[in-house]
Length: 326
Image 1 (tube, helix red, strand yellow):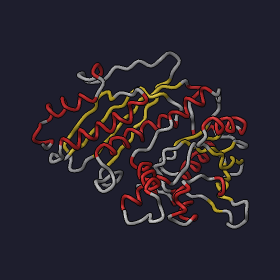
Image 2 (cartoon, rainbow, N blue to C red; image 1 turned 180 degrees about the horizontal axis):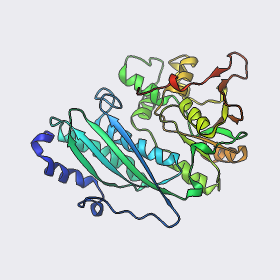
Image 3 (cartoon, rainbow, N blue to C red; image 1 turned 30 degrees about the horizontal axis):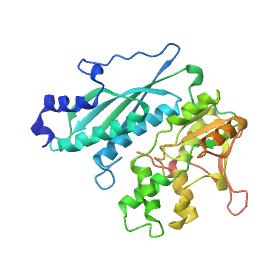
Image 4 (cartoon, rainbow, N blue to C red; image 1 turned 90 degrees about the vertical axis):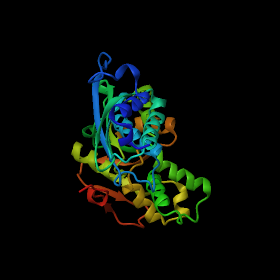
């Protein structure tokens, strides 16, 4: 059955099954924010043919990625999620089963964090588009801001980078990756289709009592995140090439230089890039396991990739080397 055969009211009724029952039915949802907490709001759009396609992403994976992108933005602010709303632009010929799969993927991603779908809107369009607004809460003094980095801080990433870009390449070109085991191939594809928002890190920061943290997520790439933080904080950074973690399986398939490029500029890994005092960073690395300190914040404004071995010259990082919509 197609969307235009079902009709708007029947479609809305069907989609409301995936929403928080007491939140839907009126013109807007009512939410309470805990005392002493600030409301955090973020919006993200995913467009068919730009962010997902039938070649690389099933309906459930598209839903998962849409929800994960927004939860990752909340994690990047140090926030606890309260819920999301979903705006959809849909061609009339779209199959209802695809739409139900989309919502199931969102629910699957949101469920571990107790985050409901609060409602949304639908309209007719020539292209499928998903616009999600996520709502969260955080104590203002615990918010993670891009502008809070200081010279002397260390740079920490919460996990490896480059896996999502590698997974996308395998989905687009299945004949590639001949040196990979089936387990490695599956893990890289999973990294692209089912990224994990790092809300666990937010909880760990609270438990460790780490107060001053600057940062953002790496959805647009590791290099992009470091550059954006440095611009907002009016500082620079030095990244050590040999400290940047990427999946070990990549070098069984591609060159180390290509793996480093995907780690820096591939994007959609949805890890957190944090700037904090070294002692606090070392405690977080010890607790988290997957995290790594990859460099330091400097007073000079340049952002450089360095190689202590001397095999590679210093390389300036630039925003335009990563993905840009325009």
